[in-house]
Length: 273
Ligand SMILES: [Fe+2]
Ligand SMILES: [Fe+2]
Image (cartoon, rainbow, N blue to C red; front, side, top):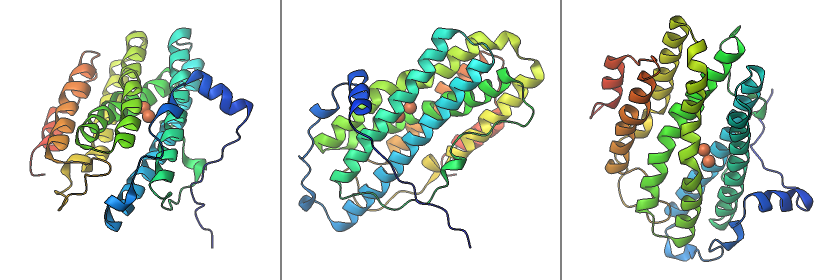
């Protein structure tokens, strides 16, 4: 019997840690050591550990996705400064991994998460040419994924009361806006090279990806107050995500001739679904 390995992080320290912290300063200045877990119930603490353990994994997966995007951009000859921005976002995400992991430790440690890292990089359509491989990852990772993560983090930031958690969320938010723009910057350059069929394929991919995220705004109200440690998804947060589907994904993509199926968008963002 094969078992899926557990997701675990390594840290080298020394010269590589120093290099990362020179490139991304300020992490040590966050109010580490100020969380008083005695103020929270056992359920709240375990929920916080679960959500932030998952957050660490999400940041790590984002690093893999932008890394794959940087490689695909190199393979299709995208503008060098655009590729550099993409590769630099990989470092942003790894810094987010560090901050989220440190916060998870202060919350009492990670909860187990089984994942085969061999499967961490995003898949692209078999046989796709390089510019389409890059376009597919740009859309799923940046135009859709990061466009939804901005309002999700903003809402958590508005709800949360713990200074340390607020400080970590502030640091993440400071970077995420550009992460959501990178995909559109790529389309500015690539769009003339795409055929109508390829744009139709990208539109399909975009709405399929939105559907994967839809449980974030479709999930039923959580009962009780589980917001005290880390924010969470209240109705205002869910509405912000629905709005972002139209405002930050469907409308901007339409400007590139990547038109999402309007009926599917309407169904996905409808209330009570
Ligand atoms: Fe991030
Ligand atoms: Fe990001």
